[in-house]
Image 1 (tube, rainbow, N blue to C red):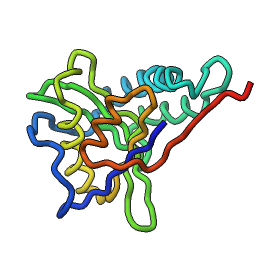
Image 2: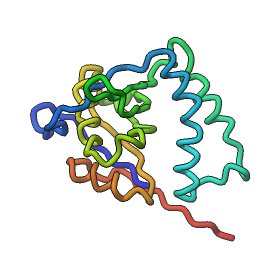
Image 3: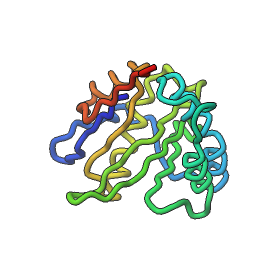
Image 4: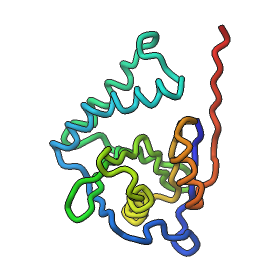
Length: 175
């Protein structure tokens, strides 16, 4: 798994959202409840494919508790739950945790998901680009996204848009 990061510098960072197709807004109550129910499957499927978890071998109670909290009204402080849309049609959603650091606020992306019927249309960059001014308004100075090793396309997209590799997490079974 790789963590990619990008410092948000309004004077120097290139604009990600050239086409400006995607607009973002916070999730409403029903969307948060649906996301909290769907997110476990989404996250566990990614972890399984990456080989970092076997849901039958370890407990994921901490994840379940955290996801259940996302459905609360209001959601826990520091959790950012967003919807992306094109011409008022919802195309995806994102979940990030805002982490306070000594030098500012960081956006730690937990999931960024385009719905299957909207994939392959070049919307990822536009979605990220729409999130950028939104999170800058909140005071975010750095965006960090975790990318599983099998998702080479996502890694290429983020790196091509100026993100750098912040961390690399390797795993090997010792049995």
